[in-house]
Image (cartoon, rainbow, N blue to C red; front, side, top):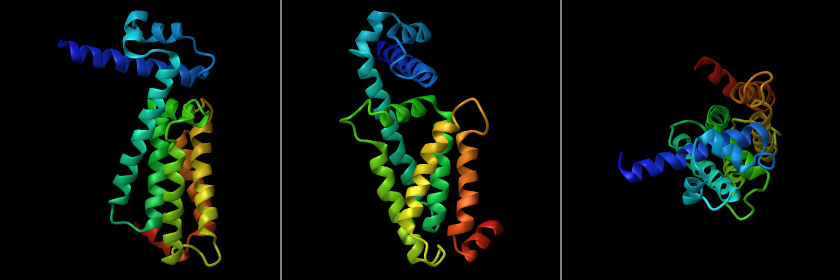
Length: 201
């Protein structure tokens, strides 16, 4: 195996092991020895890739931050109305957090301010959701009198909550919880026409 490929696999093993350990016990409770044991990597190999546990955590934060723009661009390219894009995009985000431990751990680390100086995924989500919900209101996709900014805030809070509660071992997963949030919320904020079109798809 070429040396570069072997180094990539070693780095990936460290990242995944750290994500699994941080996801299981939290950043502060995980010693470096636990990451080494889970990854099967020596301490020397670890320090070839990362100078510390903190630098490894920052790598996880960067990985999750890099993933969200790709998901967002994929949904924004679809020929859908802005409310459908917001719904589908957050459902996919919850599903990704549930299924990918690296994304899940990186998101948790970012929320707990492990990376104060790193670009936060929250900065990318809030304006995008506000824009989509504002456009939904202008297009008549929301009920009269509904505040699109309030809907955007509720939606973002819901996906954060779904990713935290839904990734525990109890009850429905994050994706199912986010879909449930939308089922309840949309009945009160979406226009009857939009709801009818959604049911007929």
